[in-house]
Length: 597
Image (tube, rainbow, N blue to C red; front, side):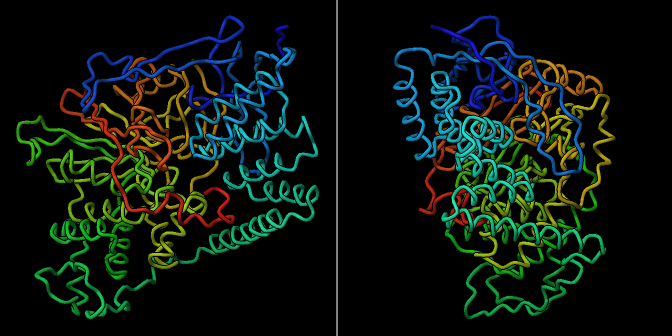
């Protein structure tokens, strides 16, 4: 009783880093295994445990062709229907199909509640083999996709659920949530209005509709200000007007020597010029953050203003050289650069990296590859630590922008709420100005290209094109900046619409062409949780590194970082998560009534 039906593409992000499905030649369940270091036999692994192999099953999936990406536009349109159509195995004629689906759905629900979203997606995907048009299962999987920021796939599932049952309000709710995350507020409003129509007494739906309408007004106001070319807050914000009460402030101050906060504003401001900030102040601030205390707002304001000016002076592509000397704390090691992926507000895991690998210095430089904030509830401490080291010595740490160094993500995933809770709204606005000036990519020793998301899918893009990408703005929906911040690799050739709803998925041929065209060796990117903390793809040409272990206190993944010495061969170190104070992830995510928490 095996039949095959055609439904909208349903891709498990735990299995693939793409929005389409690799070609398969037969019906049924296929198994495909891959090793975390496949394609790089010369790579070195450092860990307290032996290297493990992760299995990548391809369940219930058969032939599908990769879709050609639709051209982007500035209009707010529903374009997720560009996803390919796939055929999946349908067990709905089996005698026990309903019972099997119900059991798998129940397991998926349990995993969803526990925050194990990838496992939830796997169970829902299995359930859909038995009941492929079940609106509840499709809607639940859409919710899990939203949790892992695969908004494009969430929209696909929500649409399929609506097609199956047009009266199912939760499907419209999921669709609205995905549209809101994609900054498509008018489409989200349309969906929430439909929820309210179907459930007129649902107070939560009406509250969410009000939040969306508020966001639309705020968006229009921001665009009006931009159109009038008004001066940014940094042009008028004066830290000299912020008073420090010596009787109440017990934190470090940059003048040092245990002295009271300086009244010499000019001398204090001079210390926040790049290269002038005393290391003693930086390390004292790190320890202060570790003890769940903050440095004074006046110092934060000076830091942000200085960083904004400094980053503004850089091009969008940084060139990083490997030091000529070994790290001071490890003189037997080869000179190196350490590349880290997403840290997402997991401050105590960042400190663990420094304990293992040494604190940033000119002979021990780091490149943190975006997504410093959001999700984790110590995002303020993470980004302030990075920026303090940057101003202390610009050559000891390098920062690239991630898709979470953006206003809309900060509104949804907690950083905005955290900054306003720990400081205030003007400080948050200064953070946004800094984020808008962050470089988008880096090249290490003329061979390793590093960017947060992925590669541009337009043929012939050069490093000089990337170097000249305009910054000082929120990322557009399409174009070079969008590709660099949002795109993901896929295992088969060509480009496809992204599972995220922004950017594209790019194949090994695109990676090969970009690297060859620019005389580069390897792409290093982040942007995705990996079970072992890293993954090597595209025949060793693409490396994903993710440095937030046990992401959101629920994923169970390891974190990793990479050393690159003069050989430019990656040497991986992976590690487990460490203790942190009992403040849950997303504790400050109040946007949309905590919809995404």
